[in-house]
Amino acid sequence: MSALDAEMLALLRFAAERSILPRWRNLSEHEIEEKAKDDLVTVADREVEEFLSEALTRLAPGVAVVGEEAVHADPSLGERLSGACWIVDPIDGTTNFASGHGHFATMVALADGGEAIAAWIYDPQRQRMCRARRGEGAFVNEERLVARRCEAHPPRLAAMTRYMALPQRTLFDTRIAPRFELVDAPGCAAEQYPLVATGEHDIAIYERVLAWDHAAGTLFLNEAGGRCAHQDGSPYRVDSGRRGLVAAASPDLWDSFTSILDYAGYRPGE
Image 1 (cartoon, rainbow, N blue to C red):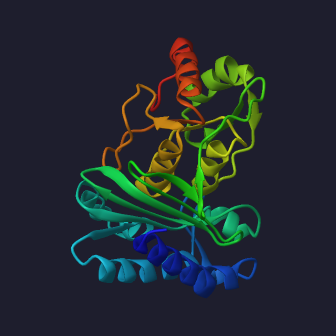
Image 2 (cartoon, helix red, strand yellow):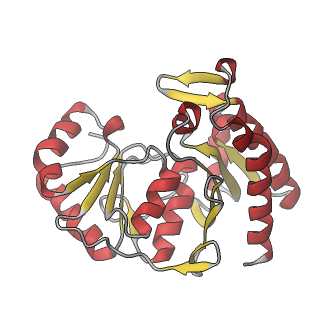
C-alpha cells in the first residue's frame, strides 16, 4: 500500500468512526432531509464531506474538491470536474444508511482531464477498502483483485431501472431482462461495482451516471480486468454528463450484453 493509499484509509476510517458508524441505525428524524424527490441527505453526509474536503485540500492544496453535497448547493462547482480534482461521495447509499438497512460506503476518486486516475471505496461496516490506480491494478484491502464472472447461466444482471424513461423501461422489461437472471441491485454503486468485480453479479446497467457515484467504481472495475464503458464503447469521463453505463465482469461479457442492447434498440437517455 502506497503512502497515499495509507493516508486515504486513515482519513476514510476516521470519518466513518466519527460521523457515520455512531449514527448507523441511530439517526434522529431531524437529521434526515429530502433534498430532492427520493434523494436523501443526512447530517453524516454533510459532516463527512466537510471533513474530507478540508483534509484533501491540505493534502493537495492545488487540487479542487468536488463533493456531491457541495455541487447540490452550487451546481457551478461541477465545472471543476474537467481539471485536477478530488471527487467525493461522503455516503453512497444514503437511503440504505438512513433506513438502517443495506450497504453504504464512502467513495473518493482523484481525476485529471476528465478521467479518474485513482479510486478509494471504503465500506465501514466491513472495514473493506477497494482501491485502484490507473495502470496499476485493483485491490481489496491488501489483495490484488482479478475480476471474474459468476458463471451463472444465464448471466446475473443488476439493473438500476429507477432512472429509465418509460419507453426504455418497457423495452428493457420485454426484450432484455428475459435473457438474464435478474438480481437485486444494492442501491449503492459503492457495493455494486465490487459485486461485479468479485463474481457475485455478472453485469450492471446504469442510466443516471453522476461523477461521485461512478468515478471510483468505474476505475476499480476496469483496473480489475472487467469493463465499464458507455454502450457505444466510449470510456466514461467524469465531466461529460452523458447518461448510460454498462459494467461487466469481463470484456467479452460486456461485448455480448451491449450487442443485445443494440439489437433490442435500447439507447441510454431515450
